[in-house]
Image (cartoon, rainbow, N blue to C red):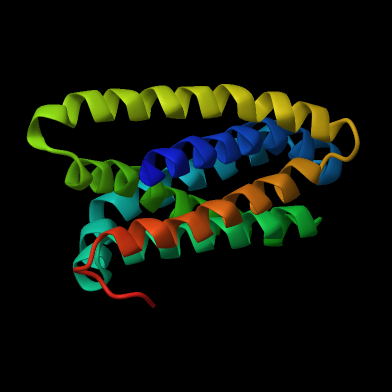
Length: 183
């Protein structure tokens, strides 16, 4: 249950990011479409490298749940960073940080869910997780749109607070398994 809740809440956070990215990039940082495309390319490259080369090595060393908690902490820091920055260079650094954290979170949610669920329920739990992700990704931009009417960077602050909640909830997920140690 807790892992699914984190999945829902984190996808809500990422939905807010999806909405907030473009207005922030254009109105606050005054980026061109070419620079925005470059940033999305960086997201893709970091995600590819993380999932092909890093995730298995890091999870073997730290364990799934510790890596999951760490990735949520990285994402939280990145969202706070987006809220605080108005520099293109810092924005790129923070984008790489978010891409790194996010590249771990999604696969680890699926991994943890599969380990928490019996063999007969695997398909059902992954389908339910996909539904939660969909709902969060739908609601995130709606809330971010409302927040952005007050201040363009405000969705990033809200995202940081929600990601921070996910980070704290992840300790309950860690405690549910006795095989891994806390930090």
